[in-house]
Length: 162
Image 1 (tube, rainbow, N blue to C red):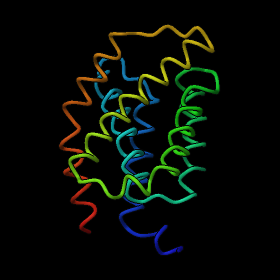
Image 2: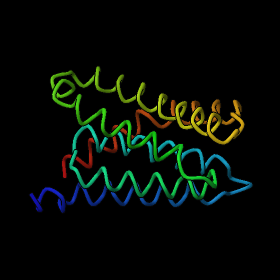
Image 3: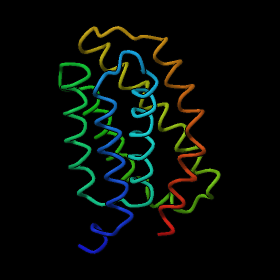
């Protein structure tokens, strides 16, 4: 069990999570696309980890990442934390059904889950804290998501073969 947690692939994915988290919470004024890229990469990596390398320690890590995202981006604890934990618990209960799907269907589910996560985070922040929904940010996140989705999955498949 411990060897599964400390495999080289898991360590690489967690490094990607940490690096993308660090880039997404540090705001680059002139290079805002880097923040969008890191934010989208974080969500894709997290969902990919849930699909292929699920472990209960990952729920604790999503709890921590959710709190830190909320503190750094929203200044209140709730939108990211609630979204990450709800999606992790829902995935835990649905994972036995998801393993039987083809890779194309899993890709579609990853796309849908990512977009639902982005939308639900903004919606929760708006409902709880009157944080305005910026549709321009959604467009940039969606464009960034479309650009990096396939290359990210290719990178993840290369990492899986290590």
